[in-house]
Length: 359
Image (cartoon, rainbow, N blue to C red):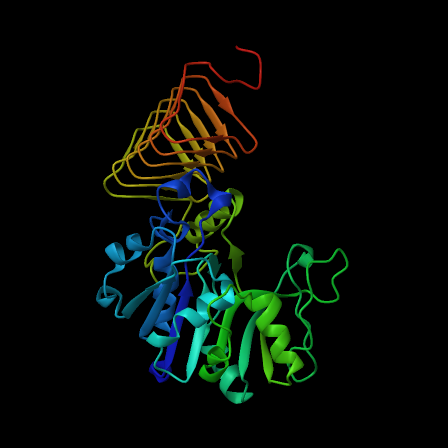
């Protein structure tokens, strides 16, 4: 795969991650632990595996956190550079903003929110063989209504960019990964916000540029909501989503060696337990994402939920489809269901919130 060293990668990681609050108050979304590693690590490992070595991160929100963690990228076999947006420029403006750091004629752009399993080399092959100006990775999904649809003709050329609709004409959606010939990045207007989906791509079609689609049905998930974040993490643990950053055995749970799990605790559904976390006797964790240093006390149940750094879930408490902020303390026998979000450091007394009568 080393033939792709002449391609640069750009990852857009400037978003504020508002849909994942309160977790993103302290850390940008691409740095949240996913199957025990910062989410971005999985994408960087896939880029390295495809033989691309030069990566530019387009950052804005909490920009310094990325460089502190990944540095120059040498540990991953990459050369990573950073460009910080001082004001929000949108997806197109974010791509244009990193142009001074780009060296290659072909530039592969990634949305930093997406967990994907597609073969990046195959996308680049499509770009080369079709002599495209821009190539889009399109993924087939069972329900395309929530996404913008991208129809293609018999030769795989993109014919239109359609907004979300209740009656989509195709099951192909924009998967948030593009290959640009460098000159088409140079054409993006500067100094103002530009949307790649709403402005750049329609303009390319209008001017007759060759916009190619690379269509597959590989694993794909936008990790923007708590529900998707939990499912994506669980899919990595269970081996449903591939990641070269996770060698070894897949299974129902992934427990960091520095965590403590008491006898009789049940960990299923792709649960992740971070370093220094403690899981009490008889606790039941199903599809739970337990960040470093969190504590789940005896007999508590955590289902499809994220428990932030250093938070505590008290004995026999129930958290289902919830997000518990860093350092929050949920008292014994509390019940938090259906999208509950607890902000960092909040304390809920024993039995303080319930959805059912006390037993």
